[in-house]
Image (cartoon, rainbow, N blue to C red; front, side, top):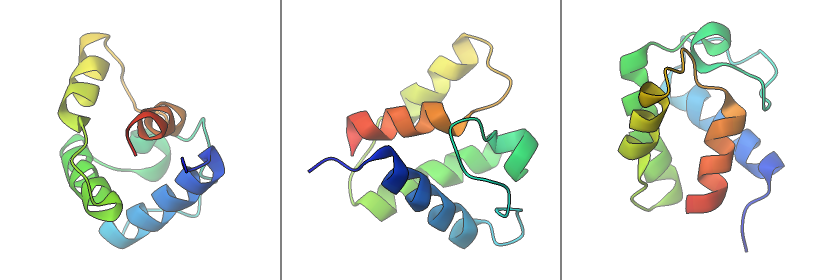
Length: 91
């Protein structure tokens, strides 16, 4: 059974809190939450986040192409709504 968006946001809050204990995950985690501006991750930490997502869900994800697509279109930040839509397709 696919995970709901609500479950995926809760998963993300758990994963980010565990992977980056020095980051502010007290901000509301939702579709408009920005990974850089709101949570305070650095771009290299997006790679770590991808690794943690794969560990959490126990499967390989096409995370590299997902990030490359963001760069290609010139996205300056990653909003969690996009990440959740990606996860809904791949987990």
